[in-house]
Length: 451
Image (cartoon, rainbow, N blue to C red; front, side, top):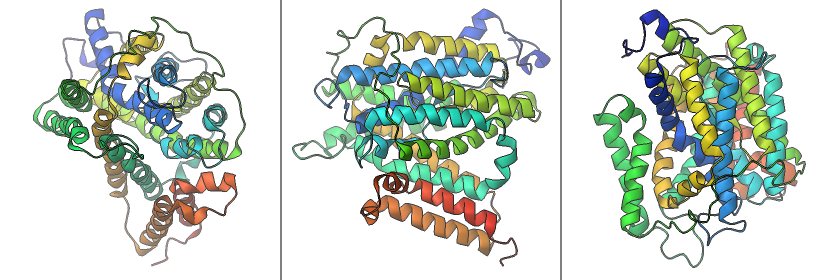
């Protein structure tokens, strides 16, 4: 329920209202805590896929690069959030929208950095910049393309994103990617902290209320972290070596144009833009009881793209609006964009302090695995929830069946595409892009009266 001690009912529904500072600061930090784990997790996953690894003794690029990518996740989530809350000309919805690193792009980013003839982090970051520019341009047309993405298509895409990620969660919980010479992989010593994360998360989620329930994954990871520490799996050696301050570096990983990555980023930008439209609508309905205006929808999309493009210049990953914070606005009843601005400033401060990233980097991979099993499972569940709005005619069942079969099949057996040229192989092997493309095309061309 809304806390009426913060302001009147009319004030709480006003995005321009600023609550008393003593209430605004805790509310802003609450927004950060609700999204913190989800925001840094994609950077850790992509860094691990790129060979950066976990800790000082793993990975080709080493500890400082992992810490740097975590830093950029925090810094540019904060910057992109300011674009939304404060605005810049037509950029920004000027609503309490929290931006963060997007899970949706992970199935495209992992193959982009993990081989398959790609350009690695240089090609990925170049793709993020160009994809962000494309995403920005969608702000001019986002309202007109929504018809091509009904729940049948968006639900399938979100489900495919989750299915592409669940394997990563299991690998992490078992101790990382299975390699020769890693006998600990899959052992009870690896699984125990991950299971603690899962069960504590479930207990907090379903047996508490308010902010505790919202931050269930974060609390679960803290519990698993403590167990891992007691088992001797946490190493603080790198925290002392991390600097107190570090500025972002433009083109840290270089510039390399890879059209497969660019195309993949642009395609996923469309999906991300539609997701943001839904989040903007959720904010205005849940917090103010009204529909979002066209100006708010386009402004939010502009902010998505600009935040992504600027972040990519400095080694950050694609940003999008965070749905969990939409739910937090509905729960607290506080629509103030200035509350979220305070949270954004907190993220930016953390983004300049490598020691924060170094502390996050002490979280063992199996503890993170327990958290992402829950988060990625929720992505799948969100897709299923979207699909529940579909009218399951034979036409829609055929579209879903063919798209899912081909997309999931290619994901499970990527070697089926081994004779494709490099660019096509990158675009197809996640299974996500072919499934989404098929669903969109079939939905547009098959007649509604197919039954």
